[in-house]
Length: 283
Image 1: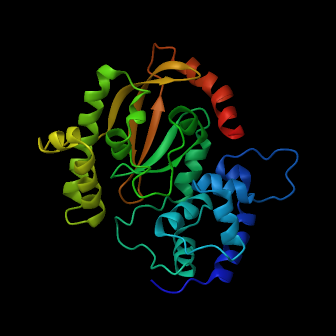
Image 2 (image 1 turned 180 degrees about the horizontal axis):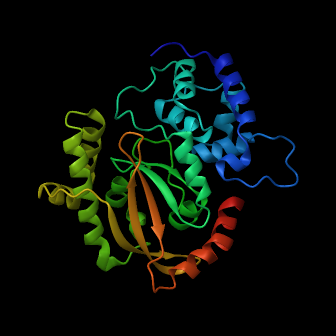
Image 3 (image 1 turned 120 degrees about the vertical axis):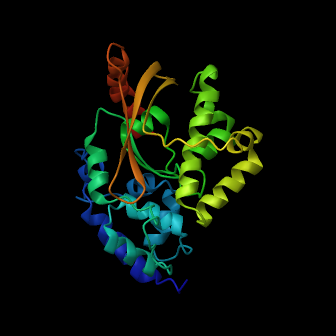
């Protein structure tokens, strides 16, 4: 870790924000917008941090951002690898290196995510960290792209936060639990010796007896597709096909939630596109 250059960091954030158009990140332009770039509040929302924290960074008076904060800012500002590395250096951190540095989502993949306006979609790491979501996914599943280390992890939320299960039928909880653990087992094998996966597993074992029991079964299954039912407060229960596509950016996955043929899920998602994303935007 080196010394943070607050003035250069603030200038880089301001000028980069000015270059990102709202339509580049799936936001409406709107008739009252005075600047072609993003507002500070929009960057903070996209990065999952408070507006006050981001404003202080742009004013060169904020604290030193953590690597998790920087990864979230790089995604929000659609930085390529060079821009991301420059951001880390200005903030006094060594840039990520290696094939599993994996928190950075490429601008191309983020652009694809934003173009899927009628299909909920999100990008996950191989450990289950939600790295990016489009508006439909946020409206369907809730915005979980936080900057905390494990707050955005689907396995951690499932086993450590009881509220995470309330949108899923109780009779399917055991099925989802086995899926989460078997998929994480596969990542654990690929990342043998990686402190990130070791730390996550140790925290899960300490937080959940259910996780520990399933982990000791040593079942392995990479998640590629499955069907799930979500009970949403606006559109009600909806069945979805969950299709997992491997992305070229390291160990990342593009996850699509599509309506199964012969169901009313398509109509429910269309309603969510009108009502749910509208509520998310206001929030």
